[in-house]
Image 1 (cartoon, rainbow, N blue to C red):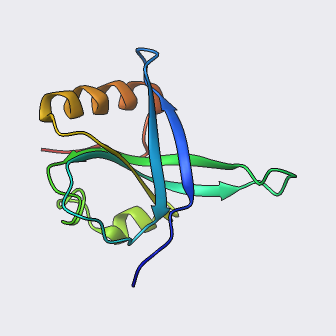
Image 2: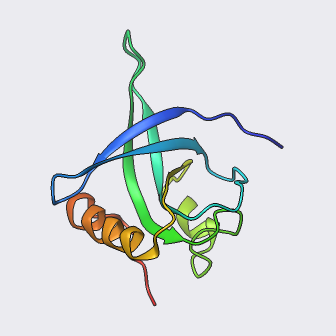
Length: 116
């Protein structure tokens, strides 16, 4: 099943750097691209412009988005927090991805922490 992208969301790290993430429904299958991603509970505010906001549940990085992100974390663990959205920022460089994850974790305080 192909799922439609919701749009984009801008995330700001503790450093002040801004990152534009594409947003999709949780469970979307992706191509094998390296990326920083976060899982969130997405809320749509019923206003004139229908803005969405995100409660960040988990932030991670992967070499291959076609694999289950955060293999050590089961989707049902995300769903305990009401997860319904996955967002990604493609980047080829693993060191850069890891720096972005650290930057975003410090400013967004996800509900779940990455282990190992």
